[in-house]
Structure formats: C-alpha cells, structure tokens
Image 1 (cartoon, rainbow, N blue to C red):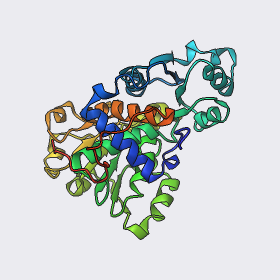
Image 2 (cartoon, helix red, strand yellow):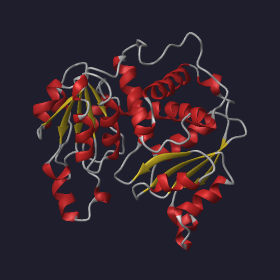
Image 3 (cartoon, one colour):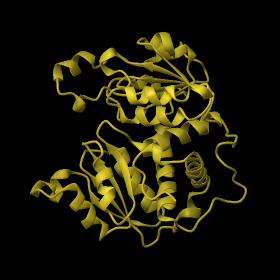
Image 4 (cartoon, helix red, strand yellow):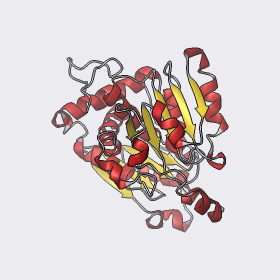
Length: 325
C-alpha cells in the first residue's frame, strides 16, 4: 500500500483510480465520511505561501472529523533558528498522524519522508511536482468527460516552472490516445523529462505538438489548462516582466473554442484569464478548486488506511458516466 505521496509516479493506475473513486463518492455524500478520521491529526507544513492547497488540506481533514496543526509561514517555524527540514519532519511526526509539506526547494518533501514516522504528502516542491493538484485535475476532467483517455489537452503559459502541468502531463500520458498541445514561449517550454515520458507512451497513441499561438491551438482542444507566469521562480526579473501577459484568455479567444471545451487553472490567476470568462459555462477552475477538497479527503483516507469503502453501488471512476455541467 502507498505510504507517502511524493510524486505522481508513486501511484499505480489502480491506486489512482481507487482514490478518484473514493473522492467521487465523497462528493456524492460528504456526510457519510464525516467521522472517519476522528482522533487523527494532520500537520500542514508550508514553507512557501499557499491559499488553496493549505486550506483545502485543512478543510479535508476537518470534514473527515480530524484535527489540524502546523504553520503557513516559514518565519513561524524553527527553520529560522537553523533547524533542518529532516529534523522538523521527525519532530512533527511525534505530534501528528500524517503531514502535508510544501517547500520552495525541489525534493525537500522526499528528504523529509525518509525520516518521518508518518505518511508525507508532497503539497508542491519548487518547480518539480504537485501530485495532489494532479489528482484534483484528473477528477475534474473525469467529472466533465467521463474518461481520462482520447482527449486533446492544451497546456498554456509557464510550462518550464509550472509543477502542476509537469505532473498532469506525466499522468495523462499513461492513458491511450491523449494528445497534448504545449502553448508557451521558448523561454518557458516544457522540460525534457516530461517530453521523454510522453515519448515512452507513443506506443499507446500518446502524442504532443508545440504551438506558441493560443488562438491557433484553442479550436482543437477538449481541455485548456491555463497557468500563470510565476514571477517568484525567475532570477531575472526583467525576463518575467517581458513574458508576463504573453497569454491572456478572454471572451474573444473563447469564441474560437469548442462548446464542449473546459478551461482549467490551478490558481491563483494574475492576468492570464480575464474575469469576463468566469461567467462562461466552460470555465471550470472554481469547480476544480472544490474537487481538490474531495480528492485530499480521499487521499488522507487512503494513506491512513481508514476503515471505509465507497458505497457498493458506486463503480470505478474510470468507467463511470457523469452528468455534464
């Protein structure tokens, strides 16, 4: 059984689909899961600012009947006194049953997991990965289309530093027939390790193309996944200012898209999606945020081995047909 979630590659397909199945069941009947984590404590260790991820983890644990401890600012931790991340993990293991860690340095949650006595969830490590956001994204796509295969997915914006798109491309690359369109300037192109992963899936019909024009790509998409240009990742601030605003989704561009396409975004947005798009029924980024609570509830249940199973009448999410809208 999965002990930690540090990377999307940790999840076997059956395990992934089971978590999505439980998350879907939670969405149908949240009250049924209201006390399954009674007496359990989640520690949220956020060495980097976060709103959605931290609060959704805390909301998830509270909705399961558990409790939450932790910090949301590195300045309030003993890191400021020189304590290592590994020592923090060992100490917090004494106080909690599971921990969610966000850190600006890649692979720090992995280091913490090696010494922690409780399960560790990577809640985002620098520009590397964000596996629980990927689970959120998968549940959202499954909810809309009833499948995770044979889709055309456009990933737009900061593909170099965008850990959410790295994880999402790797997982959706396991499903046959998926086609990716990478929409980014050269300076923010998709990293080679993601490209390599997709190359290995060509035998199941997975493909990718590169198109620097959002207008030129949007007509073909089932999913448009927008990302912000992440100023905090740039060492050269002038480069950030030059690239900021290179892609802005507005109603004029939405008019070019299919009526069945959905728009997703891990949030927060800055200026890459005009607020006028919010009223378009194809804007799914706020629904996506809600899905994040259900997914994190399901993941906590899974990692803690809590005694609950989906209702007998709920079938695997991979084959379930959903109501659209």
